[in-house]
Image (cartoon, rainbow, N blue to C red):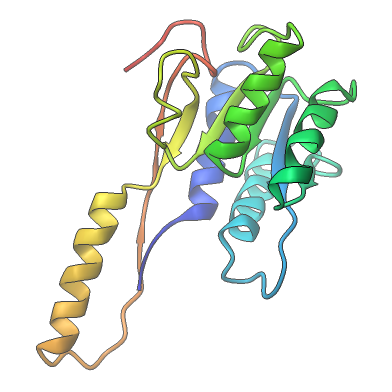
Length: 183
């Protein structure tokens, strides 16, 4: 198998917030159904908790889970933002929810990143659009695809031992994290 290291990706997001002087950090996650051990949402939550603990920050009530159903999710994202308990920095388990968070922040005159800083996950094309400019964890999809192909071909060629490769993701900084856009 070839995967992105989702725990490390979450840790990268936490460290980025800390480097920007932000310690009030939360995670907007998703309710997970079924087995959780191999689920990327769960792995990102584990990495988030570990990174907070390593930084000496309390981890209780730092993760808010929202529905995976679109018709519920959008209301839950807005409720999270307007609850009065939203942290100053939010790591979103996916760009989709990070984009929703930016959208509702703008609708409600909450400035990004001055009032709330946001990092998503997946580095989607939409996150890179200038009006959104969502900082995001990039999983190196092309590299994963290339290595997965090489791994499969080596198996076809006779390799019998199992292998599991974890690719370290990277942070793509955009204006949702800091005022100065860094390409």
